[in-house]
Length: 134
Image (tube, rainbow, N blue to C red; front, side, top):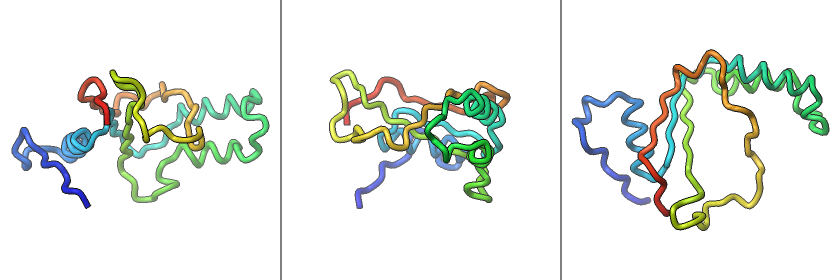
């Protein structure tokens, strides 16, 4: 196991947990780090329901209104969840695409729009700047 980089720049005791997690994620190479609460995503559920009703998920019989309601409530997946951590890694760098990092397929990709409802104010996003090659 490789040694993890130290968290530097501040006294460790002055960091909040969110700042500490973000600093660590950037230190190990993530380009984007976002933290929000594990409260339900009502705007996302509403959009998904509209898209199901409009037939935009035709051919996906498993993508139901019930599944949308379940999926947009994080505590349905982990009852004790208090926060959600989202990590991003840019595949495109100044030198081109990262090699060895691009998935072979789109399996698991999300094509949902961003949550533009009443939750955005609680999201804290941190980015260290332009992506660097891996």
